Amino acid sequence: MSLNKLFWFTAISFLFLSCSNKIDEDAEKSMLLETDRKFAKMSMESGTAIAFKSYLTKDAMQFNPGMPILKSRNSIYEYLRRGLDSTSVISWEPLGSEVSQSGDLGFTWGRYTFSKIDVETNKQKELSQGKYVNIWEKQIDGSWKVKIDIGNSTSKTQNAVDSQ
Image 1 (spheres, helix red, strand yellow):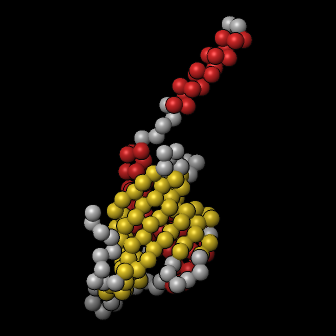
Image 2 (tube, rainbow, N blue to C red):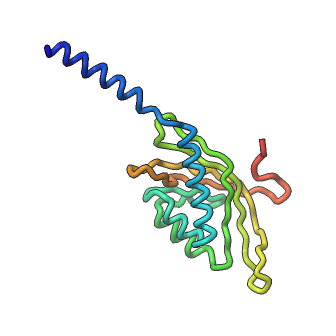
C-alpha cells in the first residue's frame, strides 16, 4: 500500500472511530441519577460523613450557607463527622440529572432535609429543608464522584423544588 493510501485509510478510520465515541446521554443521566440515589441511601444507612467520604473526589468542595467554602474530601468529612451526632439525619431525594456531551461531567439536583431523632420516641423531627445541586465528575474507572456540593435551605412553607 502506498504511503498516500495509508494516510487516507488512517485518517478515515480515525474519523469513523472518533464519531463512534458519542455517549448515550440518556443512559449516562440514568446512571448518574442512580448513583446519587445510592449516595443518599448510604447516608441513611452508614451516616452522612461516611457517605460523603465515599462519594467525593479528593479535591471536592462544599458550599454551605453562611460558612467558608470547605475544600477537600477530608475537610468535608471532618466537618460532617464533628458536626453531626448519632441522632442527626441528612436525607435527600434526587429529582433529576444532566450530563455533558463528552460524558465526563454531570449534575444532579433535588431536595434535602436535616432532622434529629428524638431518642425517647425514636421519631425524626425536621429541623430544616432545602434544595441541592451536586456537580459530578466521571472517574477513570467509569464511576461518578461529587466534585462540588451546593445546598441552600428553604422555609418549611416554601416548596424546596418546583415540581414542574
